[in-house]
Image (spheres, rainbow, N blue to C red):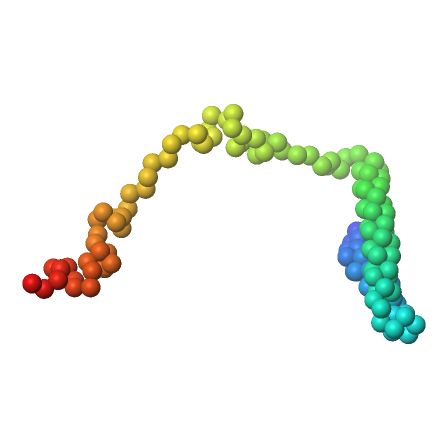
Length: 135
């Protein structure tokens, strides 16, 4: 029972590991900028780039290890249900389906009781109301 929790801990910390791998070299670069290079900003930039490269390298390694662990677990337990995809839901809305709506058909204009022909707007009446200007 402890093995699933071990894997959750190992793979659940990937985001934290990525962030810290980027921030720590950038912080060291910031310190070096202030200490030796008079706040030029190059140390932060170089530290950030190095952190990104190392962080994404670790991320790819962790993803590959996760894939190997999944394959190993499936190989050790042949009765376990493999990942399957039910493709019936994927193709239900395809254009070749008889239930699909025709996108090339002309659409009917919507008629509502609030259309302009059914009512007179205040701007159509003018400043003098519905009877027009006084005579």
